[in-house]
Image (cartoon, rainbow, N blue to C red; front, side):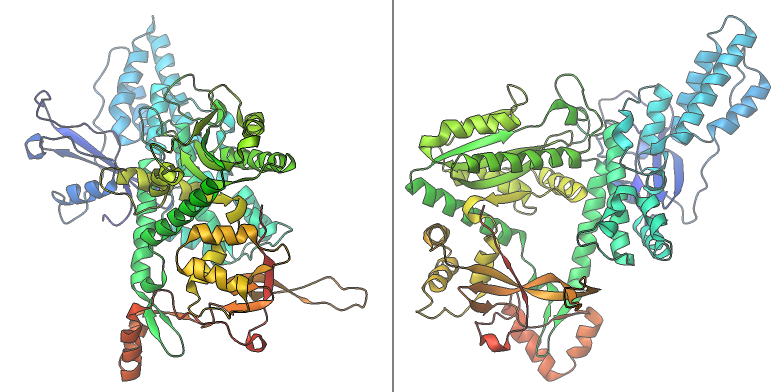
Amino acid sequence: MFNNTYLLESTQYISAAEKEFNENVEAEAYLFSGEMEWHLSELLNPSELPLQKIDYSHEYWLEEYVQSFAPSTPIPAPEPAPLEPVIGVHEHDLKWFDEQISHIPNALHNLAKQKYFAVATSGSTDGERRRLSNAWLRETVDQIKEHPLSGTTHAYELAKQVVHNTYRAPANALAGFTPWVLQRSSADHMTIRDIARAMTSVSKKTVSDRLGNYADPFFREDKPIEISERNLRRQIRKAFRQANETAALCLRKVGARGENYVSNLTLSHRKHQLATQSAWIAQTYCKSDSKTIPLLQCIRSPYEKFCEMYALVQGLDKYYTEKGYISVMVTITLPSRFHPNPSHGTNRWDGSSPHAAHALFTENWALCRTSISDAQIDIHGLRVTEVHNDGCPHYHVLFFVEPSKYDRFVKIINEYFAHSTSAVDFELIDRSKSSAAGYVLKYIMKNVSGTSAGDLIEQDSVDRADAFRSTWGIRAFQFFGILHGRVTLWRELRRLETQPDDEEHLAKSLWRAARGTKADLFIALLDHRDKKDEIKTIREPIVTGEWTEPDEDGSVKPIVKPGRVLGIQINQIDYITHRTSWTLISLLESKTLLRTDDSEQNLEDSTLVRRGPREPKTDPTIIPKSIEYDEILS
């Protein structure tokens, strides 16, 4: 009975200091399964409830708590209590009221009754009172039933605000979603699978009409993706999650006097997604021709991600500080029209989503970097994306700038981002207090899930920031300058176990710096290398099944796209780091392999392997043909 997501809304907090209960306390729960909404309401004995403040933000409490007193057989939803006769209200209206109120969540029935009777007793004559009250109820019910958000997982909050007449949201806030998406956005993960499976058999026009903007990746001219069940499932899930989070923003559930960063429901969905991923990873193994290892050993941990990021930032700090550059921390905020529910000031939200806010920043960021480059100002650093409490992103950028051009640099930044006097904040790094790496340490910890240390950063903030980025597809970090596009080079050199030959001076020096975790030396080598030196990434070619347009000779070639990284190329010499082909198998299949002694020995011997075998560079003649893409420095 309790295997799906529950949303607990509108209940009373209980504490020892509160007044004694006169009657029973009503617990309300909402189960959203596919396109159906179930309502569960049961009267509890106050003496059985704990005298403490209960956190109702997670459905897990509801599941455990209701199961503790629920009988083995399902309890049907109780009928609303019959209306008591009220002076001025016709008995036929009471029956009609019961029919209309069935479209309102059970928890709001008493409130709807009070509103209805309040209107009914406000008129001067019986006919006027009857007309006013019935018109109010009809308009309220129609507004709830026909509202675009009625199909989202926040339908209860919508109904409550409609009854209270407090719903205020820009009309264009839902412009990016089709009615089909909004009506089905409360679907659970199993229903999404069924929808995606059924949509594989419909026409392309139907896919476009149903998903709207979320169908663009299937029909774009540049590298469209295949209309497969897997890709449809991803796009549908993305559309539904963003629709539900937009509903929470419209209803002001996130931000001032609400939940931080994202709604509790979105946070719950993200935790469920991560738990599902962890369970699948734990049940999956990687198999090659000679070895079988757990998939868990092939995945980088949050700690490893944090160490890599912090090591590179420390390298930037050390190298450019010794070079005499100024280090400055710049905080950039967006205009007030992107804040759905600000804690201070007037609400001027125009309905723009966090995705639209980030798109505006990235556009201005690209133009700003172009202007800085045109002014011949050398900048390097790291950009970190964070989120305000109301779901609007803002940015912390660590810059290393030439001292002689700092004033011009500040002017260019203000030209693109200073929409108000407090929009941009410049803070020069005080070396007596901390290094530049120390300034960004807390931002790295907050945005790499699983790395919060003690009370320094609350785990809830880390989880919510992760849920925000996952929902809106916003990148947490980006290096620019010398390290732009060079993180892959750092990783692949660290995977390479054999040192390049002495005559390959650049490759050998970069390898020794990366393997020794000397990021400052690694950056110095990149900065001082000969402009003729070529550094490329070797990727596996994936045949798409499509062909190029005929050339002058009438010949065509198959179209291929870049796949996984195979290695790197430095000055025309290939260094292969991913050469073994792996196949994912289930735990049951892995147990079958363990029945043979050699497979069991291979599994035991591979327990120390973190990312599969690391092959040294080999004869280029036996390397599979691949596509090579330049990693461009900004």
